[in-house]
Length: 285
Image (cartoon, rainbow, N blue to C red):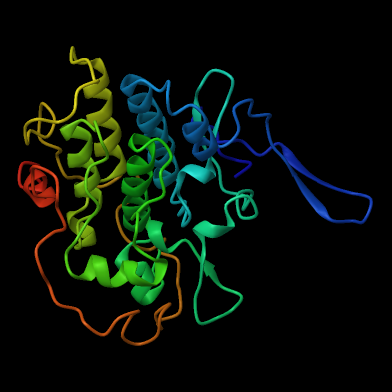
């Protein structure tokens, strides 16, 4: 990541070694620490407008990485940093593993710890990682931001997440989340990877929402997704899947996933609107 140069991507200054010859990563000082901890610590004072900016920063950083054919594979609030100017920067150095150990699930391989609640279904099934699986993870990151640091899939154990998703269920909107933002989340969580929005689309949508006149403080009251449809197009510079990370074909849970029952029921929704209703309002071509 040393070659990356973007305001929303954490730069790598260099490498050094301690007295025992252990390698150390040198990164810029981030006064406000990781985004997960910041959201939890400041949750009582976070305005929706600031959450929108955090979401925009993360989308811009990931759009840049996707254009450079970089697959993150562990996008989450714990892996984003916040500087003294409240700029969010995407990071990926495994720095959060010890602090947020409970966010990782040990699969059949005792050495493999997977961030199950941030993973796309195809990543759980076939260990495939690409720009589209990063988009899924961004949707979970967006949920973290607007829930102000809550853990995704509340009440659902790691081992049950796959079955939950394969039944067509998705997380409800966080309290007071603007419907436009929840629409983006659901677009990121489409079961068909090719139907998911791209980071460019998400960044553009959030930019327009931030530039609009609306004061983002009220709870959603209508199923309107943004002021314009999200137009589906590829990330600039990404024309094919040649950059996909080759992974093993066996699933993280075995041949049939964590549960044998894979019925396809309606989407999980205790809120006023079915989450998938939002997607029908987003034009994907």
